[in-house]
Amino acid sequence: MKAKKPIVLFDLDGTVLTPIGGTPGPGRTAIDRAVQELFGVVDATQGVRLAGNTDRGIARALLNKLGVAPSEQEAAIDRVLDAYVRHFERVLETRRYRPLGDVTGTTRALTLRGVCVGLATGNIRRGARMKLESAGLGDAFDLDRGGYGCDAEIRADVLRVAVERCGGDRDATVIVVGDTMHDVSAARAIGAKVVGVAMNESAREELHAHGAEVVVDDCGSAVVAAIERLT
Image (cartoon, rainbow, N blue to C red; front, top):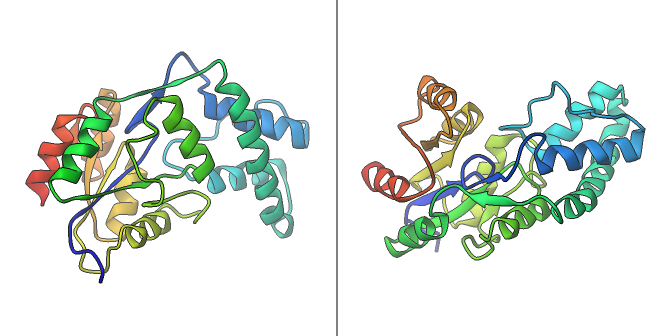
């Protein structure tokens, strides 16, 4: 039988974790190195917004920028993402991620309250696992309860996959925890509510402007309180 308990889906980057150190972050560094390896182009992501996108969407945007024919892009996307994972593993040997708040305490508290906790991230699953482990959050989420950038290119479809893997149906109460307007628009596409996590004032303004029900400073106790209010 499908689960009827509320489902809370967490984005990763800027929501539950963030890189330690300056820019470019480990993810951008790894995808740039992957493109350089495959196509000989340096700093390919310059001018490309990664936040809120999916890994497949990022790869396609880069291939369009490089002039790769649409008929060749599906196979090329797979090559780019495979190379990205290899480079990402190397980058993480010297660059790390850190949690944004008491993430483990938050997911544990929600689970104890009868919430199904899942992930909904534009990262491919391998990249998501590596980021979580880098931040010391390997036990904070069940990766089988999640939607990833390898499941779908459109963020709303990633959410739909995550809801299904959390045992939800059309009547399930779904709340998305994310940090960008793209999380809000994707949540609206599936009828979900949004708790925004804002690392700075511009992010807070963006989330409010696009209709997030609640905006908090980090992924800690305020998220639990917000979800209690929304459910």
